[in-house]
Length: 271
Ligand SMILES: O=C(O)CCC(=O)C(=O)O
Image 1 (cartoon, rainbow, N blue to C red):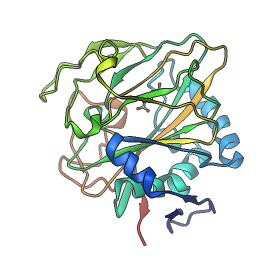
Image 2: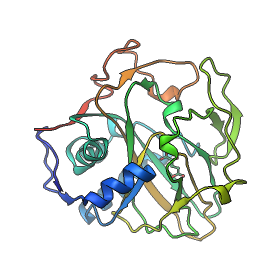
Image 3: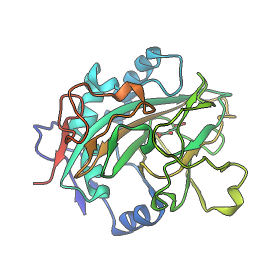
Image 4: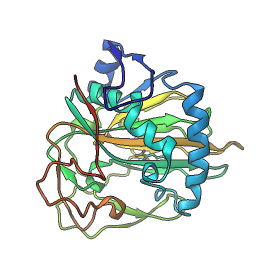
């Protein structure tokens, strides 16, 4: 299936041939690697944006909502192939942009702790994916993402936690929702099928927001930059909760409302 951006006044002519095997792998595993999706045009623009975004915060996880200030990120999130890919893997007629986020693991940075994403986000009643674009070559020693294959199907809402500046796990949030205790996935690696891919700049991993994932430490001497864009599918509604990511609270929305808003714009609609 040839996937192209939809008619939101997009400027990009990118397209990508998604194979049925990619969709099957995503549905079974909750994550799939797509090779050579984005060209040098996007890679060089987004490298500049990513480097600027690093000054947003000292905290590894807190470089978020970059697209609202940065034209290249806005174009990528809303006008590029990224949203159309999200719609394809979500099998969704409409896709909203939730937010974008920059992840730069520098030499010596520790592993990213195991977690799944949806418990952190103020949205419920639908599915969401991340389009995670590599902006540098990512090797097994420079902090590649890892996934517990099939964990997106478990319907386990693992308890969210705060992180230190280097991304390491700190305190669990006091919760008003009932969350599952977070297992020590690192200790029980041998009980799961763990997916981990090396990536080249321009490669993308699409992963389900319920997939349990982490990233290995960066023991190399190179920096690895990743640009993550979060999209939601049909039926998703707003749900505020005290313990979610405070950066993406949307004051325009009330609980139960559809996400369409300035902060969560429609990024793709099937034609
Ligand atoms: O890049 C990383 O270290 C973590 C990425 C991640 O957790 C995410 O994109 O949800």
